[in-house]
Length: 62
Image 1 (cartoon, rainbow, N blue to C red):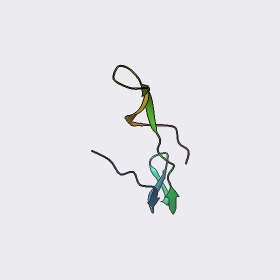
Image 2: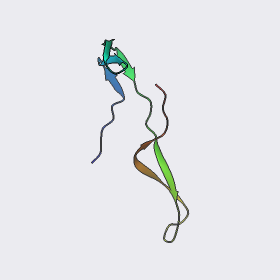
Image 3: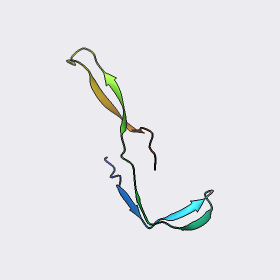
């Protein structure tokens, strides 16, 4: 099952310390999601392939 990760989020609640509502945001552009990969090689594979690990992403900054 593929999940659609949005590239922008509009008008969402912003909280401080997880409980105090600070306000409603404007528009936020999310960083690119790059999957962590593992290099596979072995019998039947000509060379090496990078296989993405589902659900694991590299570090991001917002």
